[in-house]
Image (cartoon, rainbow over all chains, first blue to last red; front, side):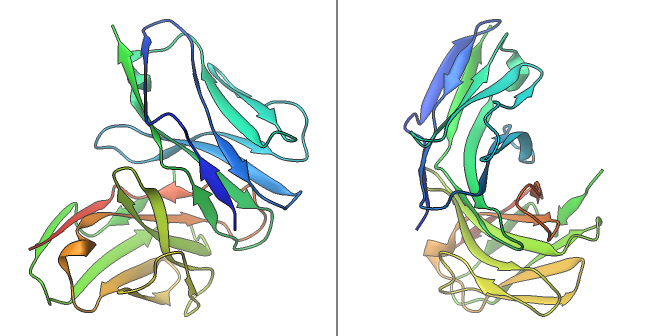
Length: 115
Length: 114
């Protein structure tokens, strides 16, 4: 069974600085996708960034980027120039590349941004 | 924009009651999901559906059932609510094809069973 581990229950960062959230996963599959979702307090969960396992290039979305290490099964999220609005719970998720497949989520990391 | 709505933001029920949680999406998504979210446990999949009248068990289906009579609506049913089902329930939807599909989440229903 696939598992997703986020080893940091809580992280904090100073506004304008950079923070990295860790995620590791366990799978025997070779074709899959990885996601980071953000859940702000009392607001809906939204996608931050996704990565296809067959792509070697790390995905980037503005201030958000990932460090995808397929052999190590590691998928960390880097947030640059942190803003107060980045404060949220972040979930790492894994999904096999198959129709109607289900995703497996990590336990989440709560990020606090200090002004 | 995709919109996923859930029938209630907060719900309080008594032990033994039958509880219905409704989820509606407006993007013609084939896949729909029900998760429960508990502190320290992340999101755990209860059931999902990839077509009308189709359903698949997730990781924690015990004590729950689902119904998908129309493509846009996916209901979660607690036949006899118990206190250990007190939780935040999240609904999500996505397209059927491929693995890159993003899941779009509803705002959640915080259920308290007394």
